[in-house]
Length: 455
Ligand SMILES: [Zn+2]
Image 1 (spheres, rainbow, N blue to C red):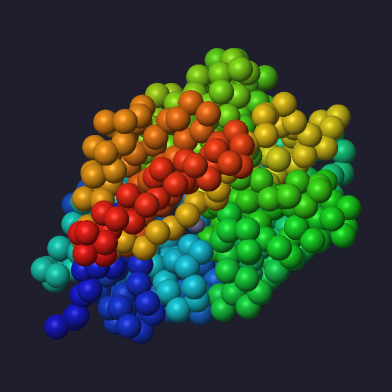
Image 2: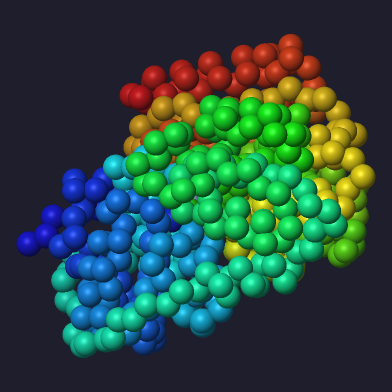
């Protein structure tokens, strides 16, 4: 009987520690459970891909065996980024598959993103796979396993969508994840001059953590952009679905600033287009979209939620502070840091001013990055409920996802992390003093509720 840690079946994926939460025998059984799930939904074949972690190729092999044992034919892509996997699923018409990756998590982790229909599953569907696995009652059959190299088709698709007006110079920091060389190769093929930093895939992530929105990880990229006189730099996360950008002065841009730049470019082409951004983004982004003739909409944080909201509202582009950028207009409607890098190269190549000057008309604001406050899983939603009630009695509060407290000259957000036993906070204000005041209004009571509820 296989031991199954239910805790690793999470909101958006199955993720745990290699040789502790799962091993190859376990992953083979997971393959059979996924096979059962897919067959119930009418699938006859499944797609597999994996990131650059040491355990990933072996997991692809046993997962393929598990899926084939339920009767599904299996197509293995080998080592690819998550967006390349999404691209292959769309391009080859798969409505079932598994991408083996733990995104930006440390090297001891691995995980599984399950594709069904036209997107990755979340919530109850992830738990359904757990239940199927625990029940152990799988269909039997003997599917065929084959391999396919999708990269040439992917590269051709991207290159047909963006033309550079001049050969911009770009530093690419791959963080030794799955999409460094891929992104650098495509930028070069488009005519950019590329400086490669940590582009070789290495699942031990020897240089820095592959999370490009954490400033500490981007110090080498910032220095290299300045040293090589580059037009900009891009940082990629471990599985290539999140992007961070550094302007030519070596300053790291936040996800909301980057989204504003993509949105302005889009709105020139498609006036009135819808732009969806998560609740962590600056009010300056929403204001900027409206000022450039777009329709801005705020939504709950979480990449599947942003994607779903975009489909519902017919939005053309969307994004998150976390660096997930979803390109619907002019692309396939998923988050892709490689396409994001190429798109940014196109925008910068046509501009008369450097990237640092794009948002020069934004007022100076003082803000914090995302702040993580430890808060046990069991009480995090209760703490958020208390925050909503407390602040609603005193201020304007947007409560779609935690409490975003609007102070007129600034705002503060507290929400429960989707992925960790933590709260996520962010603050912004028009002066440094006001920022301090807003934090002093919000943080002490939140700490108090955590202590009171037993954190
Ligand atoms: Zn990722």
